[in-house]
Every structure is written in structure tokens, then in C-alpha cells.
Amino acid sequence: MPLYEYLCEDCEGIFETVKPMKEADEPAPCPVCDADGQRLMPTSFTAFIVRKGYPRRIPDKGTYWHLGQEVTYLPKSARPYEHPQIKKERRKDPLSQADIADLTERKIVERRGKREEARQKRALVKDAQVRRKKEKLPPRQPGKINL
Ligand SMILES: [Zn+2]
Image (tube, rainbow, N blue to C red):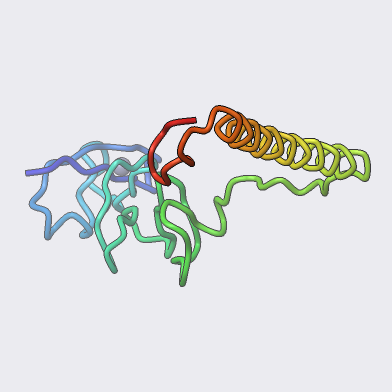
């Protein structure tokens, strides 16, 4: 049988009594003055129940627990592992003009580099073709590496 706590308002005493669970809410006689003591609800909780598929604290305050954090409502639609109330701080500060200019410049340089790379490859192929003609070699076979 579990242990319950009671408050005696007559003598302002707190006492514990072992009782069957279904009688726990009924008053218990105070061991000092024999008045009826009222049950004290525990102030710290480790007990959870599952309601609507979510763990909830006992007594049920109407809140839910989501990823170990108390929330007041269930997410209607959310990304996995996210709740609107406990959403992680997203990047709010918009990119500055300087940042945009910097990113644009980087993109341009990147594209220029790729174009230059492609140009060099074409030049190599062209050189090889010229060399083959000079040396009277058969033209390069597609799909074969014989530059
Ligand atoms: Zn008492």
C-alpha cells in the first residue's frame, strides 16, 4: 500500500499514512488530535501517464510533453522533432548588402573558373586533333581515350 501525506488543519500537523490507493483521497485521522486530515498532493512529480499518445504529467495540468519540454498544445503539423513552441532559433538577420555582394562575387568567380576549365579542355582536344592531322594518325575514336 502506498504512503500518502495529510494535513491536519486543527493542529497544523502534517502526517503520513499508508492507505489503499482507492481510499487515499478520503480524510485520515490525525495521530496527534484525531481530527480529520486532508490529503496533501505531492509537489514534485515523476509520474507520467500517456494521453492522446503523449506523456502527460500527473495531475494532468492540460499540458503536454514534447521532447522533454512542456508545451500547451499538440502540434497540428510540424517537422519531425520540432514543436512551434520549442522551435530552434532560426537565422533571422537577413543577409547584408555586403554579404550578398560577396556571395555574388564568389558565384561569378566560380562560374568564370568553370568556363576557363572548359575552354582549356576544348583547347587540349583541338591540339590533339591538330597533332593527329600532322602525324597522319586516324581521328580519335569516340569513347576511347587516345588523346
Ligand atoms: Zn491534528
